[in-house]
Image 1 (cartoon, helix red, strand yellow):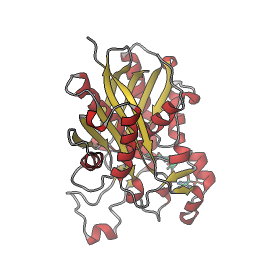
Image 2 (cartoon, protein in one colour):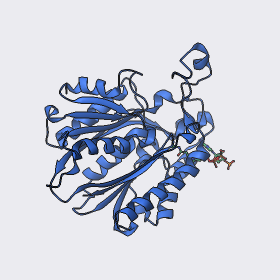
Image 3 (tube, helix red, strand yellow):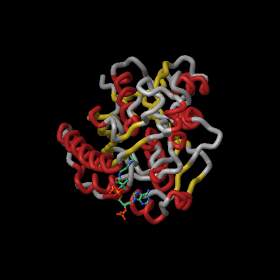
Amino acid sequence: MTRNVFIKGTGSYAPEKVLHNDYFERVGSNDKWIYNTLGIKERRIVEDETTSDLATKAGLKAIENAGLSVKDIQMIVVATTTPDRQAPSCACFVQDKLEAYQAVAFDVAAVCSGALFTISVAHEFIKTGRYDNVLVIGADTFSTITDWDRRDSVFFGDGAGAMVLSHTTEDKGFIDFDLHSDGRGKEHFTIPGGGSENPASKHSVKQKQHYFQMNGKEVFDTATKVVPESIASILQENDLTIDDISFMIPHQPSIGILKSIAKTVGLPFEKVTTNMDKYANTSGATIPLVFDETHHAGKFTKGDYLLFAAVGAGWTWGTALYKW
Ligand SMILES: CC(C)(COP(=O)(O)OP(=O)(O)OC[C@H]1O[C@@H](n2cnc3c(N)ncnc32)[C@H](O)[C@@H]1OP(=O)(O)O)[C@@H](O)C(=O)NCCC(=O)NCCS
């Protein structure tokens, strides 16, 4: 019997503190540039919460929305670049906070592609029959790795999104994934300090190497090239065209990148789901966060083809096709 993997429930959570664009006048930026270029009006910033706090709140909502209890979850996978600690994994913090001790828990590191890669991992465990219900969470607090004295502090916000994936014999769920990585791009978005290559030291902290470093032009040029290629490939593999797609649920890097991708693949921009005006780029959280909001707004109709798309540091990128 067909065992399709589908999204049984979703949830999201963002911290309460709102940081408006005006704040960035102190580093020579301004609301007009940020909104017109990046599509961001404001972002949420943690005050006394950690990444696993956000992840746990989003995860609990997804479990409730799926009509399940914590005890039904057999695996928890968290996509994050900003775990509470280097060790253990953020997923183990979440497991403990949920008291989901029956579940195996681990993180996936793929930065802004993290949620998509995490969903693909969960998909394989369910498809093969190993597990029935998996909680996937994307959660990040980039405010903790941002140098607030730099102009590129405008890009990121904090948040979490979650999905419970389960199985069904109905004709719905994930159809295909197209995933890629290219480590030759590793210098273009990186956190150079604090790892085994450059352990945390007075020097690394003084040099601010524990903050992210981004080559904006390379991010733009790579994202607008590789994502359309992946979209073309997954559509062709599955005998679909861009006109069959009801909604694209992309990672939220900047409105400029998303407009360029939509134009290249011929997708009307009203089919591209965005929420970066409210949250900015929440890295691993963007896809499950925007998906949760779109789902709860009742936008999806039975039979809709949905296209997930992500690109992030590494490089990492990919797409997934889903039938609602
Ligand atoms: C960041 C980005 C806008 C910079 O544009 P660019 O053309 O590559 O580089 P430049 O530094 O020449 O910037 C272009 C203009 O924007 C201005 N600018 C750049 N960052 C700015 C900021 N934070 N606030 C205000 N103005 C800014 C520059 O001053 C420059 O202005 P000018 O044309 O009047 O000289 C662009 O590279 C981009 O969108 N990259 C994608 C980054 C991204 O999405 N990251 C998140 C995912 S990892």
